[in-house]
Length: 410
Ligand SMILES: [Zn+2]
Image (cartoon, rainbow, N blue to C red; front, side):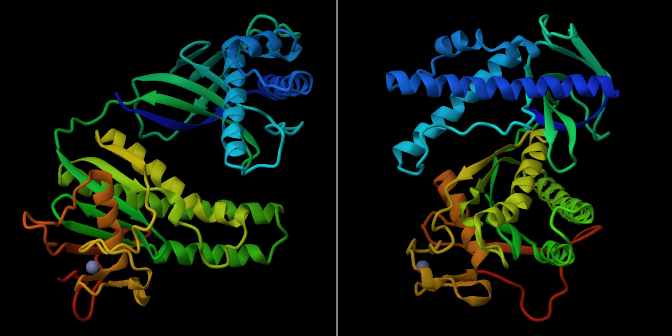
């Protein structure tokens, strides 16, 4: 049964909220406490022991570990292990100058995670266990939740209480089992994400769909211009950021729904998406923080595709290495950077000539499934049938085009 993550609002009275925040603060103290002890050990012995056994021993010395549910404490412990593991990996590659993973900020509220036990969800009522040893004697809290109305799920597998920096509120995430639509399809699709063309989608039958990203781009530009005239992080500035996000999300939702419907229609069982490494430069996005900002719509889109795909019984994976897929000729396999001509056309000396995003999507398809959708038995490239769509508030539409439609020709 597929799992999806639901974003959930929490409606709690002030006392309950205060207790939850305190428990989250305890999680931060425990996280930092574990790190501190590991650092001290390292100073003395020269090595770091991140075994569960050692961390459990340290946990006994941390009074704040009594501030929340014991299984959640174990999950905080595992977060420390993960932090060390990725730190070791960076260190090995020489990508960090630090001696250990960093502490969380003092005012940081860490997530409270519950897997399988310690929580109960009945309708919109949630009850969480906080263990039996809190100083204030509180053993459990209850509150109400709400989420998008159109989602029906069978069972809640995991629950996390998190602090949402954007809204400044605590929220919940539920990992739920949903009933998927039966899918006996055998078709496949691959997606290349981009800015001018939001999604270039290649299907097993050789057809290609392009979703224009121009509207999203102009919406983002507009709000960013408005934002630029405001003081950063002021209330108005945050409001604008929120509005931009909502509008972009609506457009992404429209595109994702349309694409998934097309997949269902074509009997697609699997979708492969290129990783986000290719999405780097945008207009005026220079430093790394801005790159992160630039990439959020794509991460959001991938989440939507995973979730909508799961409901339709479609497997979605987003880790296809898209390195050089945009500069490789899909017909002859040559990698020539200069082949990517201006105005989004890919032209190769072998005769292959197509819209560059189509070429990219076909290459991602080939990389993901080890076979090209449009190579016939002779190994020659056939001609993909392309439909391109414009994206608007109310849906997607085929643009009225003067002159010839975009087609790949050999
Ligand atoms: Zn070529």
